[in-house]
Length: 121
Image 1 (cartoon, rainbow, N blue to C red):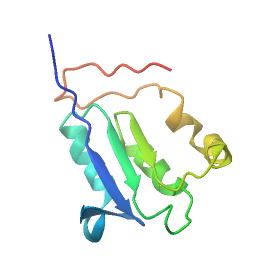
Image 2 (image 1 turned 90 degrees about the vertical axis):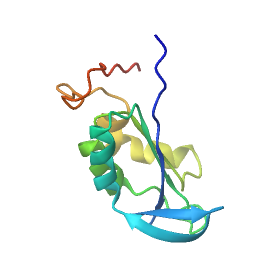
Image 3 (image 1 turned 60 degrees about the horizontal axis):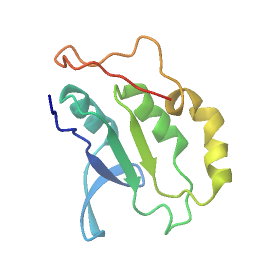
Image 4 (image 1 turned 60 degrees about the vertical axis):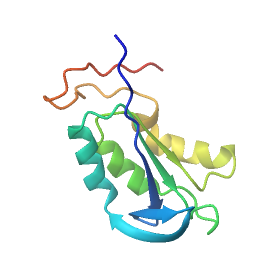
């Protein structure tokens, strides 16, 4: 049976979520960790965070924020913005290894979600 996938894409600016119009005039709308909790309860299939100003400001991805998101998220997530080359990905790989590449034992969806969470390498 067909089931549409729910994949929210959230925009980051520094450490907060923002709402923009054509990526201009960002307006603060909340904390990323709170949104992860909301989307856990809503049974999202994945979640995407894009730091819209990281590349322009020449910032690398915020590893500490990604780790906090990984601690809270019960779904696969992606992070974009500020990735300039393969070295920046490999630098984050060692500290983010358990979030990015491995399936953590004991990770389950909310009890309200009756859809099993399956991941492949």
